[in-house]
Structure formats: C-alpha cells, structure tokens
Length: 376
Image (cartoon, rainbow, N blue to C red; front, side, top):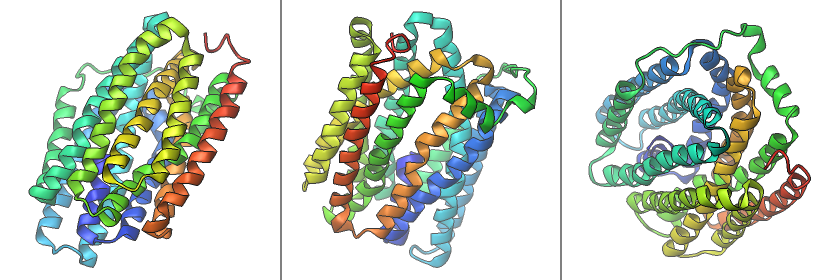
C-alpha cells in the first residue's frame, strides 16, 4: 500500500503528473539514505526490535498525515507539502522494517541449507500475496472512500504488523560497530563475484522496473483515462503472476538449477518490458506488466537464494544494505524522469530502458555461466 498507494494519493491530491513523479523520487531518495544506517542498526539491535519500532513510527506518521489532509482542501500548497513529506517519511521507515525482515529471512535460508531457495520462494510468496491486495486496496479506498480512510487502513496494517511481530528480543550479532557500515558491505560484495555480477544486472533491470512503477499511474490516469482503482489493479494482477512464477520456481530450480531458471526469467522480463513500451490500451498494460513481474519474481528467488548462501552471517545486515542501496538507485532517477518527460513520450523512455535491460542481462548471465560453482 505504501509503495503504490502514496503516488496515487499524490496524483489525487495535486492533480499533477509532474508532482507525482517528484513524489515517487521523494519516496525513494530517503530510502536510499536509510540504507546507510539500517543494516548497521539491525545488526546492532536485532531484527525484532527494529521491525516493531519502524512499524509503530510509520503508523504514527500516516495517521498524522490523515488528520492534516482531512483539514485541508485538495490541490492547495499545504496539501501538496503534506503528501510530499508523507512520501519521504514512509519511504525511510519502510526500508528499516525491510532490512529487518530480510535479515531474518536470510537466517532461515541458511538453516535450510540446500533447500534455501524453497524458503526464499515462500517468503516471496508472502510478499506477493500482500502486493496482490495492497495496490488494489489503495486504489479502491482512495477512489471510493477518500484519502483519510486509505491512510487509516495503512496505519492499521502497520500497527497490526507491530503487534504480530516477534516479542522475543533477537540478539545482536555482537560484532564491534567498526565492522559495520557501507565500507564493510562494499568489501564483502566485491569479494563475491557471482553476487556482484548479479547485482549489476539487477541494477540495470531495476531501472526499467522503476520507470514502469513511476509511469503507470500517470499513463493509466492521464493518457488512458482510467481511474486510480484501475491503476492499482494493474499491480495486483502483476502480483498474481509473480506469485505463480515464484511457486513454479521452487520445482524448476530443484530440476534445472539456479542459472538456467534465472536466465529464462531474465529473458521473459526483458522481452515483456519492451512490449509494454508498445502497448496503447489498458488491457495491454495490465497483461504485459503481469508478465514482466512474473519474470522478475523468478529472478528474485534466484538472487535472494544466492545472497543468503554467499554473504557471511556476521556482516549480513551491512552487505544487504549495500546490495539493496545499489538496487534502489534507479528509483528516484525514474521519478525525476517521469516528472521531466511529457506523459505522451513515456513510451519512448520505457523502450530505451527495455533495450538496456536486455543487454545488461545478456552480459551478466554470460559472465555468470563461467561461475558454475557459485550458482550450483
């Protein structure tokens, strides 16, 4: 709801495609900044404590924004400032909870040994089930109940997450703080060539994914003349496709291994992204983005499995912070691009991103083929 609902809220509040793109950038720039400290904080204080604190803080921020927006008229400067600040603050808090849950999930994967990819597919299935409901729910509530109800629902879910989180304190890893931070994570990543190459490919791919995420609300509402609910439905349909692909990946990796499954998923995602750029109907966008996210879902299983196997446990939070920091860099850039490019020209930008995505994947998986041990 945060990732897809806040840009819809900005568009509904301001009526501006440019401000929607800027809000998307504002939602992601602080997230990138948060990763400079999130990994260190999680390693030092434990996953459970940081997860609960982030969820509670997000609930407070969202409720405060709901109260303020209720008292303001839409399309006023004060309302615009409110939704922009909301995008930035929720982005930061979401990343702290994300690093905490990813750290816990990787610990579960390490305990699973050779069946780590099955653990990761289950965790991704949980993510995609939430993504199935979140965007559609955001769009429907915004369209039919208004911003206050949508934000109230988001705050309730944050409080519920805090309540359902583990109440047994997770022990810190006990390593001196000097071993934490981006420098340690960067050194670890450079020492793992298979992981470094895959991260490089995913950076290029995320540039295309970020552009799709930033552009879809503008294209669907402004160019295709559909509602906010329809824009949210696209990502819910994509979550269904991704969930099915993630489930299928378990058996596929068991049978063929990580490298072949990852290569096929990359080819599917790149081809579908190129096709999205040529689509000119709502149905075309919905179906093709679903295919894109199916490929991305399988590829994420490969990436997370490799990551959980290769990164040493005592520096996992710091290395995770670096990898995700690199993967998030395209998102604010995509928001700024959408703000600068006329809505009618966004298809050309997506075409360029799709071509770069295909080239990037081709280079990366050719290189990874020479590292069979790492991808066994």
